[in-house]
Image (cartoon, rainbow, N blue to C red):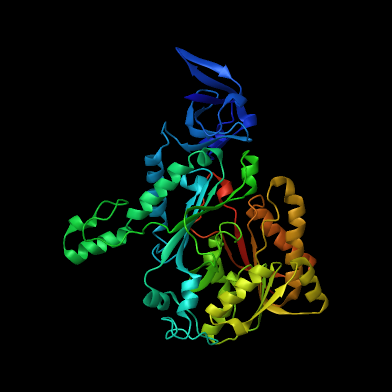
Length: 489
């Protein structure tokens, strides 16, 4: 096994839990020869091969996946000398699934089941979407369809998971996958096979325990994370299809070409319908942004909806309506008749948003507006528009530290405009998914925007990404999403 020896003192960050070794931290690289080791250059490492990483004092730091084409020359996946094969991936996948079970019902909820380094699978992202083909939903809503009796599509009537399951049977699942590092891309076939084998047999522990209680036989409980024993619950099951979404900028930095498209099974051309917080949303894995749907905002959308008590709501960068539809539905439940302006630059996204609005029974409460958020906010300010709740969820303005200065100006401007547009007592929900923008800097720019707007803010809450995107202590890159809730005084 080749060895990467770091310069003296460079091991501190890794000992603190960070899993990357950078090229400028490397003192030397050693390759095995009969009877010992010989020095080689970084360029002589093979992209994706296994390497051992050591400190300048020969302290063992872990085993990693090498890439001489990247600034990150080794991504550490284990503190021990652990090999990588299909069995390794199956163990890691089962551990990741078990970690999601505390907050998610994976039979009905979509979730990120692999989050790269935070799940000790560096450079691998897997989102699992649970639902039904949109075509089946639409066919079920026809005059003679099985869904028609439970959902007429009238304003105020919402499609629910229970109604669809009763009419169409249990949901299916699909995977959206990103291979973002050489070490994972090189082993994609082993990873895909491991995902299929684990998901086909994985039974959530509560199903096994329930089955054991129902039969009175503890033998029916099976082994945690293993396949079903006789009489246990239904396994999660094979996904019907896997779609690759590896077009992220990081692949270019890794020396990899972009990769997108169907890689296993099939995916409905018209998209699928998933349920988030029991609200239906259409997802297009092949055409949608990122992995198809922003699962990381699930809890934040529900929290924001709590402030949609009547009045006017502006959902900035609305995409397919995650925040705005939650706000409209919450208002419908409370009888507050919140009216939502859904702003986005994409015509296609707004078309999907209005389909989502109809499925949620709030089509009459949402007004789509196509346009650039900077221009539209300025026009609203000139027109002296006022809103009671404004949600800002823009794309990552800072995709790297070098772009941070310009991003700060962009974030500050949209927050400044939003604060000016809020009525006294109104609420601002402001998000940033730029990992390069840390929490302290994000809060500081919100404060500066408020000062420039000559308004005072009261912080009501501050949150991060949903728990299926775990934050690994010592690896700050895993904490990327910030979401602040502020009342304008």
